Image (tube, rainbow, N blue to C red):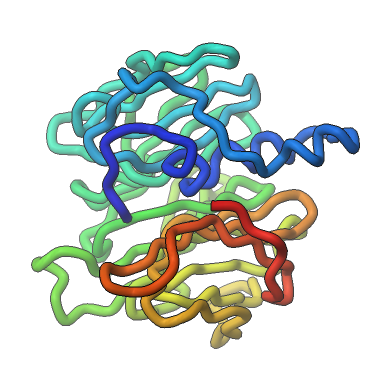
Length: 275
């Protein structure tokens, strides 16, 4: 979870919402050439107090948490350059990862109150979807075709010192009751997403990308499909419909290189990247 104060071409693309929104269409050859060219889409006046969680809904609206102040969500409509207020979370809540389901519900990882909240379509008032005293600090979300959520839960903050990080599966039963279970433990899982067929769960941690085989109950040990050079620090992670993995890679102070969005094939081999 990296904090920034404004959206620029690197900052937005590094959070991985825009390129995947563009990739969702059926691009022509010309569009494919433009796909990974970074560009500013918002005005410098669109400021954020800790930029996180970019997600695009079915109508093409872009949402990001902490617009102007913490505990809020801002919205950028298609074709516009200025974000507008969309929702204010309950007192004490601060959002991080955002995902939408097929019905248009917005799910937000609330790391301050250790819960996942939901905003129903057409609503701006959040409600608790799932919470647990066993959460460390829910960070990012992935969502399956059936609406099952997967949440990364790193042990950030002094309150979690000495604890392991976790990966959760959160699902709604036939009776409408929502339940969650820890399906894997790691040092500090961060970015998270599923492969297009839902059979593989990718997780970024420190400088490596892990691949888990999805199965009922606990997940088996993962395979490290890619390790970046020392000094790398990975954040958000998303997949596109072709199975490519987009990873926001920062570079720690004093290390060579610069931040970039790395693009990996499903087997972990690198594709051309943009920065």
